[in-house]
Image (cartoon, rainbow, N blue to C red; front, side):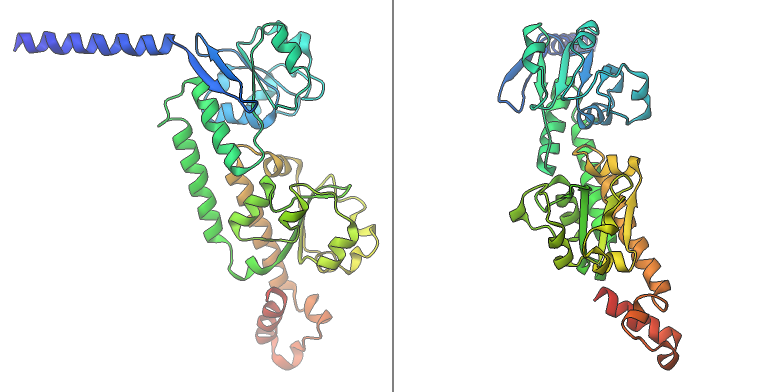
Amino acid sequence: MTKLIFQLMWMAVGLLGFALTEAQAGVRVTDDRGLVRTFAQTPKRIVSLLPSLSETVCALGECARLVGVDRYSNWPASLAKLPQLGGGLDPNIEAIVALKPDVVLAAGSTKAIAQLESLGIPVVALEPKRHSDMKRVLYVVNELLAVPLEKGADKVWKDIDQALSDAARAMPVKAKEVKVYFEVNDAPYAAGQTSFIGETMTRLGINNIIPASLGAFPKINPEFVVQANPSLIMISRQEIKGMRERPGWTAIRAVRENRICIFTPEENDVLVRAGPRMAQAAAIMLKCIKDKRHEHSFNSHTSICAANTCQLDRLGFVVGQLFCRLWDWG
């Protein structure tokens, strides 16, 4: 018995030594440029210059490793306490160097990557643009941070995917037939079917009027939207100004019936970032559609019913409302 106990103790010591050796061996990751980055030790001090990457680090439970972020990284709220280091187009190189990061996470399009690397600061370039990118980036960052998969990327992605499926199942069947226009800024640029936003819409079964053939975020001729005549518009509070004054837009069904979801800046951040909050983005879209559908159902006797000459006095209020709902959402 004593011999067996000693054997088990030596096995435990051996396993511990192996684990320590693995941890000390560091990590090796490949970024979006195809460059292999090898770190002798797991990075402890991280600078992130892209909100979606900052959020990914935090989603993996490693917010404490961030020592600085770009000016747009604002979730979770604790990031507000960190040094703000400019943006992807104008990073503050001097401030980044002063923080002595083990690695900088940045989009491949970020300026000054070469300058940072020439100063001996390794950069891992990652830029998620699609759902599949988000999953890949999540696992790359997980590997970089050496987080156990069962507590990190595996769990995070499983939760995201499950929440997206739940949101899709919660979408009213008739609502899936509604034509939706999602505007990302007032140029106007729209979210196409191949964009991160468009993929979320597709996952929910939302009928996006911007076809895949136009690209991810095409600049749209306003007349195109008039001709498409969406039943619902999704837009941020910042971009709503002047929308109703565009030629012909008062005739668009969504504008005429005031079925426009105006997102707060906080909601807009969730919606437009290709990051780990994509399930929350789906929930925001779902609420938008449900709310506007609900509002219309209760107000149809004074709005759409009037436009389509529904005769509530003859049909009766209940039957008339039912008819108008079917007219509107069918």
